[in-house]
Length: 396
View (cartoon, rainbow, N blue to C red):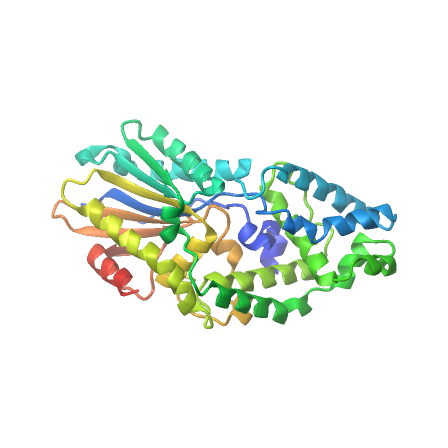
């Protein structure tokens, strides 16, 4: 609740726009230099994936407007919602202007932080990119690499996107129906946190008539929140949560937070099912790293672009800091914050270092901050030996 008061963006959960804060990185042990990066990024800020999000509330708001029962706040919210919907037209599911800027900034920082990787030394002149075929991932890939290329003019960039790569970037396993049913159970258990009456009193001057129009108050209010929470990602970007009580905002955040934890993190109930999503990607990380470590390899980096439904299972299964303890999805909000862990443009960066003896160390950055794997002993500070990290990843 305190975080929501200080940063209203936090209410958006996995719709939260990317937030970067500068942090110092631990210097590598003496004699080690970075030479290869393995990376997976969620796309940047996007539009809602379909008009269904708006259909939960906008047609009903239109009817209530025609009946003259919108309050002044209701009229203001509806006007803002119409501007957000108009911007969505022809762009559902696509990257926003902000999303492109986010990826551009991250690409610029990775090149500036690790210039040795992009210097072309030792014949490492190739940057390999893979993306799902979804527009928001492809444009994220383009924005990110454009920024990198400005700092690496001598390197060669290759790009591929398609269903072939979805098999590991964002797989669709057979047990998704099991996960979906569990998500529904989690949501049902938390609906009591939403005071629909209080929201209706804000939006309408005649709640009795409004209730005759709105048969399912929970779904309607859910729609109001979903439309409001995507607004910061858009160009028009109106503040649409200012009309609502902080308890209701917290309630909606809690429901979404726990649903995401249930479906894509390491909950007590679904962790094993979620791990099946991550395993193909973990295998790809190891295989591509071994290719990059082979004598004579020209690879300087492997950049992957996908979705929260690929990244979150990855870091949950690996068990990075904050994802290393399993909680019940019903109480995830007491321990875990989706707004921090899986905001737009979130990424895992694995930076490979080597010394003259050929010893290899790896440092992990999550959302551009150093992180560790509590289950695995580091070699030095946040640095892991490749052999121990490789063995650990393969054990998963």
